[in-house]
Amino acid sequence: MSHTIHIPADEIEISAMRSQGSGGQNVNKVSSAIHLRFAIRPSSLSEDHKERLLALNDRRISAEGVIVIKAQLHRSQELNRLDALQRLHELVQITAKPPRKRKPTRPTRSSQKKRLENKSRHGQLKTLRGKISD
Image (cartoon, rainbow, N blue to C red; front, side, top):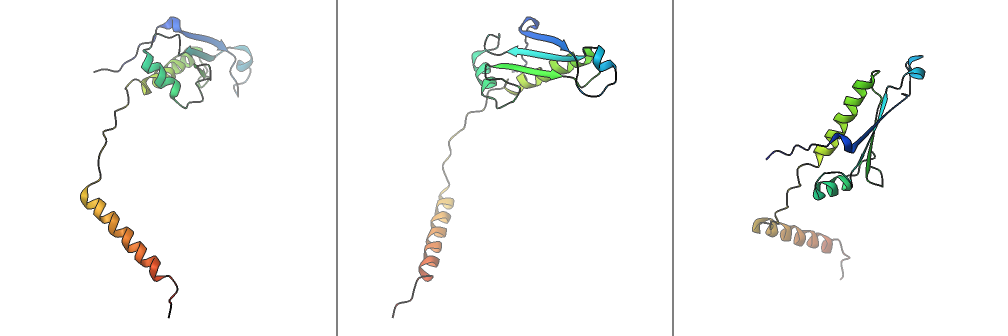
């Protein structure tokens, strides 16, 4: 079963802005950085997928449930747009596969026996540390 998610383009809000950092005069003239916003709750993703995304402890997800990605690694606006979309895709793909259910197991009889032997040995050691009475 494939867990590939498709996000429609109309659900992603992309805006260009001036990039920060070094780059000479080009930084002051060209809006090459990309600011991507994707609202999780009104999106077309499935409900359980939305819950898993909102439960992620990621600083790119705001308290309102909006993924905000700022891409300014490249000097080209198009490369930054592709980088932002790629990072959004990776973040969404993390939660595409539902977590596996935990199958409860019981400790083996030998491990239980070993644990009880260690407990009694430790108890005997503690009693030997006590004061000796005449």
